[in-house]
Length: 162
Image (cartoon, rainbow, N blue to C red; front, top):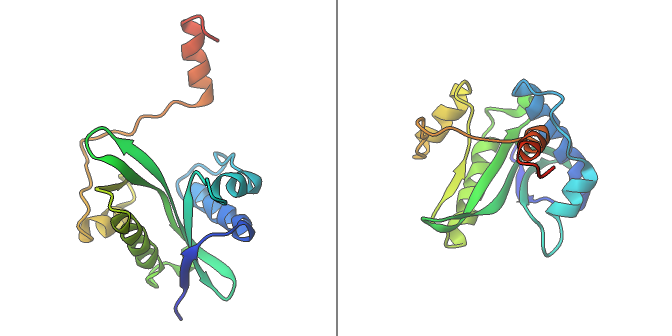
């Protein structure tokens, strides 16, 4: 049975958050999710949304999501960043991930942008294989760098700015 791929609406965001939390458990970070349904509605809906979320829906149930937003590359200009591609565990292998992934690639291409990019955990070999098989370049020599609130505070304190 096929699913409908469409842009998420405010009423979808509780189910979107459920999938985000499911991904956090899968990625061994079950307590890392701080975003709320209200955040998702405020920043992901309306004319000036900060992100676009595509959903795979079947019988009013959201089975998967792909959340994207714009970035700016000094080399390419405006690009799209795929933050997360999530399919509920029991529905993996049915083509939902490929349908969402295809929608993201199509969305980016139709906008005339030169790149879509994302991060994948090196231990998630099924995802790495999936992306490589699609023609994506998994750049193993690059490292993701992040600084959380506590690290920012510590850094700024050392500079006398916090």
